[in-house]
Length: 189
Image 1 (cartoon, rainbow, N blue to C red):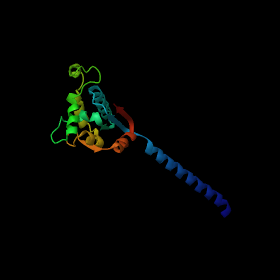
Image 2 (cartoon, one colour; image 1 turned 90 degrees about the vertical axis):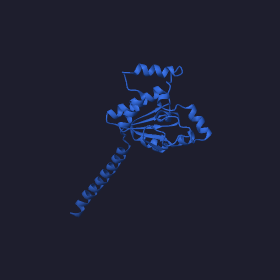
Image 3 (tube, rainbow, N blue to C red; image 1 turned 45 degrees about the vertical axis):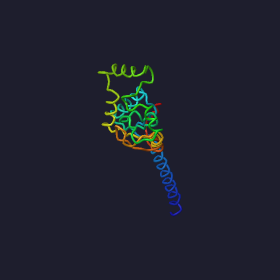
Image 4 (spheres, rainbow, N blue to C red; image 1 turned 135 degrees about the vertical axis):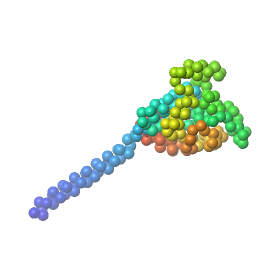
């Protein structure tokens, strides 16, 4: 009787080991499945590219997705309150003078024609779609998570209180943490 139960017991143990291995593999696979999130990385300070980024962000939040937006280098200008020069060293003042002070100062990537291009786009959008500033406010109210590139702050002389939205100052690792767990990631340059 002992001899006949031993193969069955060994078979059960083998089955338990295989089931346990399959459960471990399934758990590992589940950890790599992207979540219902969108990650948008914005490098550009062009009006049209900023509009696209915020329209995608707001569309995703309207669909119930979590959205994180990472602003780096020129893209930081999109969510600045305005041009702040007081208390900055000369090189940072120079950079801040050359960059747009806020979203209202962004020029389109095409058909800029000085400030005329942006005025034209604002005129065309009136009554048809929300302005960039309204899009930013919608994103803020919708719970979009805003990240600012810490190295960009240091390099360009930005300070932590210069933003129209609440920001998380972080590095590339945090940006990758958001992007790698997202179902969709966009890089807009």
